[in-house]
Amino acid sequence: MPDSSDVIIGVDAGTSVIKAVAFDLSGRQMAASSVRNRYVMGADGSATQSLPQTWADCARALRGLAEKIPALAQRTAALALTGQGDGTWLAGKGNAAVSDAWLWLDARAAPTVRRLSAGAGERARFEATGTGLNTCQQGSQLAHMAATCPELLDQAEVALHCKDWLFLNLTGVRATDPSEASFTFGDFRNRRYSDTVISALGLQAHRHLLPEIIDGAQETRPLTPEAAEATGLLAGTPVSLGYVDMVMTALGAGVHTGDAGAACSTVGSTGVHMRAVTSDQVHLNAEGTGYVICLPAPDMVTQVQTNMAATLNIDWALALAEELIGEFGEAPSHADLVGRIDGWMDRSRPGALVYHPYISEAGERGPFVNADARASLVGLNAAHRFPDVIRAVVEGLGMAARDCYAAMGEMPSELRLTGGAARSGALRRVLAASLNTPVRVSSREEAGAAGCAMMAAVAIGAYADMDACIAQWTTPLLGGSEAPDPGLVPVYDTLFTTYRQAHDGLAPVWDGLAAARAAEGA
Image (cartoon, rainbow, N blue to C red; front, side, top):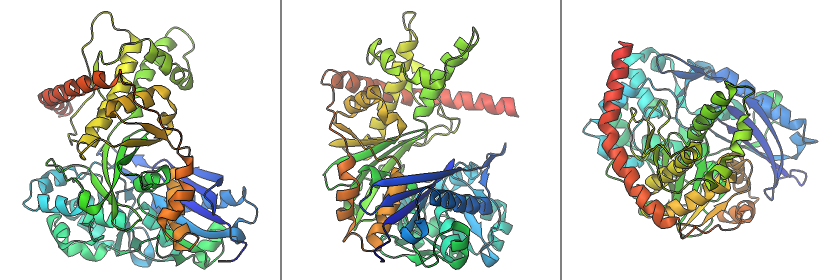
C-alpha cells in the first residue's frame, strides 16, 4: 500500500440514498457524498429499481466525493461496499440486467411464502439459516419467479443483491458475501450454501444462479479500467465486498466490542435489534422468526429481530397534529413538532396506555409475522390528551424492542443505539427502562459505510484483525452510559405484560379487518 494512500471509501447503497463516505485509516470521517435513489411501487405489490441507474448513481456519488477530497483517486487505499439487504438483482449475458430489481419491499412473493412455510422442509431450512421466511428475501422471490415468470430465470446467469451488483460493475466479479449467502441459502455455522435450504425453497434447478462467496474482510478484487473511468478512481484500487447493511451499521455502531451481552438497536423508519453471539449461542425461537446474520469476525454472528415500523409511528402521530393545526392556519413543521416530544412526555403519565406500533400497511415481521397486524391504542378515557398519545406511541417502540429481544433470549446487559431517534432523551429513557438495561449512543454518523470500510481496512492489512479495528474505529465513539430509571422499570414490566396480552387478543380483530378490506377490493 503506497504511503500516500490514506483514505478508505465506504459506499452504503440504501433503499432511498446511495452514500459514498471517506474515512482516514484511523476511522475519522472526512467527507460524504450522496445521491437519491429511485424506485417504483406498483399496485400489484411490486417494488422495483433499475440496475443500470443504480450503478450510475453509485458512480456519481463517488465522483461527488472526489469534489470534496483533494487527490482522492491517488489517496484511496481501498473501496468497500454495503447496501440494502434481500431483494433480487438478476444479471444475464454480458452482465447486463435481465429486468429491474425486485427490492426487499416487494410483496409479490406472499403466496409462495405461504406455500413454502407450510412445507415439510421449512423447520430444517430455518434451523440452518436461523432466518424466518418472508417476502423480502431472494430465496422467496426466486421461488415465486420460478412459479410465475420463469422466463426471467431462463435469461439470468446470476442472482445478486444490491451491493453485489455494484461490486460486479466495479470489479467484473460475480459474487456475494457470507452474510447474505448464509441467511438466505446457507448455514450460518459454516457460511456456505446448504443443499437442505435450497431444496426446501424448491430451487435445486436454479442453484447455478448463486454466485461465489467472498469475504471482504479477507480478500479484495481490483477496480477495472472501465469502472475507474466511471468513478474517477484509479484502476487496480482494492475493492472489498462488505456484508449486508444491517450488520455493517451494527458493527460501526458497536454491536461487537468484546463486551459480553451488549446489543445494538437502530431506531429509524424501522426498528432493527441485534445481539452479537458466537454461532453456538444462537437462540432459535419456536415461531421461526428473525434473522441470524454473520459478522466479519471468526464464528461471530448477529441475532436480529426487526419490527416493521419504528419512527413511522411517531411520524403518523405528528402528522395528525400538523394537519389539524393546518386547518386553522399555518401548519407547524415536522421539526417543530419533534422538538416538543420531550415536553409532551414530561406532561404525561408513564404506562397509562398501550400502543401497538404496527402502523405499516405491511403489518408486522418481528418478533412475529402477520401481514394483517395493525396499530392500536388501548385504554383511552375522556381525560387523555395528545401528550398521553405521544407517550403511548414512544412507549410502544420500547415495548416492541423488548418483544424483539425477548424472542432472542435474555435482555442485553447494555444497549448501543444508532439512528436519528437515538438523539431523543425521552426515547432513550423509555428504551433503557423497557429493557432494564443501560443505554449508550454511538456518535458515528455513517455507521453502515464505516462498517464496510472497517472490513476493507482489515483486508488491506491496515489492522491485524477486526477486533483491533473495532478498538480504534468504534469503541471510542460510544457515549456515556445512561442507566434505567428505577421508578420506570416496574411500570414497564407491567405494561409489557399487558402489551403482549393485547396483541395476542387482537389477532382475530386483525383477521376481521383484513377480510373487510379484501371484500371492499373485490
